[in-house]
Amino acid sequence: MKKNAFITYLTCFVFFSSLISYSQTLESPGTIKLSCEMPDTGNPNDTFIALREAAKERLENRSTPCTNFVVNYTGFPSGIPAGPGTEQIAFQLAVDIWATLIESDQTIYIDANWVDTGNPNNLGGAAASYFAGIPGSTDNIVYPAALFEKLTNTTNSGDDIFCQFNSSRTDWFFPQDINGDAPPGMFNFTAVVLHEIGHGLGMAGFGRTRGTIFGTGGYIRRDANGNTTLLENDPLAIHTSPWDTFIESSGTSILDEGTFPDPSTTMLNAFTSGNLNSNSPIAVAQNGGTLPRTYAPNNFVAGTSYSHWDEGTFNGTETALMTPFLGPGEDVYDPGNVTLGFMEDMGWSLCQGSLLSTEDFALDSIKISPNPFTDTLTLDLTSNIVNQEFGISIVDINGRVVFNQAANAISGEITISNLSNLKNALYFLTIESKTSDLSITKKIIKN
Image (cartoon, rainbow, N blue to C red; front, side, top):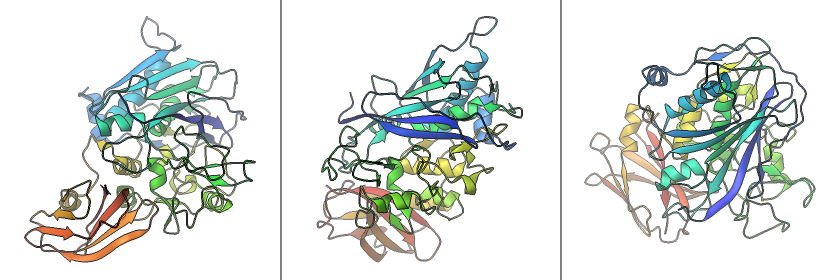
């Protein structure tokens, strides 16, 4: 059974504006709200992002998936003759793609519903429950159910992801394989499902605006139930998502309350600054060493702002799947390495293996002990890097550097002492070679 459940839902809407937009809002415990009014318009986009070869081969060879997904389909039409209809086949295609990309020993359960939402302009959405209680962790990060299960090797009695899509629409294109090319004016159902499952797997942050509560301002942290409370400075509002921990503005973590009080208009200004980036190390490496820009438009749009890659930067690229918009005629069958790099930094394992380069594996294989630690950390280096000089830094969850020094290995080890003054919390340890371009960041926990 799960412990310390963060019983809430991060709900993802899909709707039309000038383009098709995906978004998500955090609802109170136990609620699923899939409603959005929008005009039926869209800018054509004939981009085709093919599935990567390794995943394509697994699908075509019917290899054993790296993750087992179980989908409970409700309301999806049967085919002729009896069997899954085109809608369910297109949905399952998205599921099968994710099963070739991420790796988990735990089954991921999806509740998929094909229903008339009562709103002809509504496409649908997805939701995930979030949980706290990673063993040995003293941080305040809560994880989407599927990732929580992977990290803790536990099972959940309920569904990990809830999906609902609008059966009343007439402009869906239902791919039957990864070569499906949406006609002009039609929207690729598989791409929409891929995107929403991506949110359910953790590609989403808690950043929102309080509106009239305490005046207009931005906020991230929630209480133990995932709710915004009536207390402006609620001491229980301390919970964040994995996405939040990697977002920064001009080099400062969005979680640094010295710079971005939570809640505050200062934080809302950051959300609308056009200057939010992700410092997720592997995502940065996959973006050519540049911090991937996230979507932070001048006007905050609930559910669309903050939790996506930037549309202007990544539209039409291999990173397009997790941008906020999808145009009619646009086909995206792969999340791209920037997204998968971020997911790897969150804690997911990739079916293809780590996106770290061969040289980076030398750093990735460094053993850090003990972890959790109390006063001292020992880094056990591999033989091919033991003679290099390193810079060691430790950064807290608010982006503050709490330790920084140069170090050389002695007998293949680097020892970091005098850490007892650090508070019990999650930190990020960066190991950077002074003699090459190798660098890696790892999570450490102080107990």
